[in-house]
Image (tube, rainbow, N blue to C red):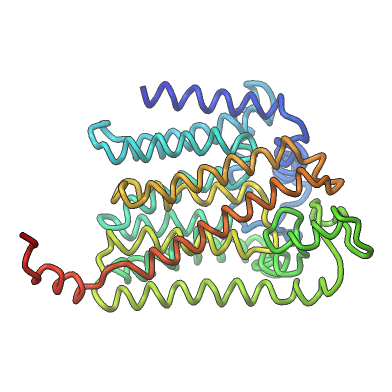
Length: 402
């Protein structure tokens, strides 16, 4: 039944990409296909001959999708590639189907794909999800391989680096985590340098830090409401260089400059809190899931970009949490599903209204952002409440109530 549901969900979401408004598949045929086609034809390789907004391995799945283009063109091929990647991760997660927790995690994954909609499938982020799930599930028994998978994911889209940080804090075999990440990064870096792309090795970092406030980011809400209410000097505009809608208004440069340091400080604070818990004896089962989720939600909630496909990042840490402790994970998983559903309402359903700052669309986006920030705060609180060894021993030493 789970595999039948897997097939139905992927077919439906893939088909919805063709039927829903505002081009939820746009990145695939507007940028992925031209970038990969140019590389295959020797007309320039993004990240090598020019700076690129993505890490270097992001080009690999874009090129690989051409192998399935005979099925109906590049866009269909991309959906097939993502489905095959998901199938591999789903097979690893479900196993023989006997584990109730794993079945619950699989159902959550499918529900999330359905509620987030085609933007979750037709973006490069979709390829990193099964990689991250496999990496998290293998962390304890195969930490080196898990680290390699997470590092590969980070060289496709940066966010799995947060899972690497969580693994380094929570897993005892830290040397394997470091070796896997360093080896993978070294292979990528050497390949880029030998290919003539040394000048663009870290181009994706500078490209992201130079960006303004994207329309959907939580921090953009004030400027978005300013435009919706007709305040002078507050408006939306389209950035032709990075192909996205942004907001502007009073003191916008100050806010833009503050967001990257704020994100870094918040992430460092979460890592330090997790490290303190690990040092004081917190178990990996209780520590890793909230730490991974808190880091990922901080990356989304305090990000000045805020693309809807970022919600894909919530899947792996919540899948892990449901596998290890589904009772404690369920409330946060439910909140994440609500955020995914609201995200699909915003994009692609109401995106046309959002671009003219319609009050109803702005209200739905604001509600989504409130849910997302609530999830971030809740994850951090759950991390802060992870029991440490001394507390566990003290609780076990107390006499049971009569």
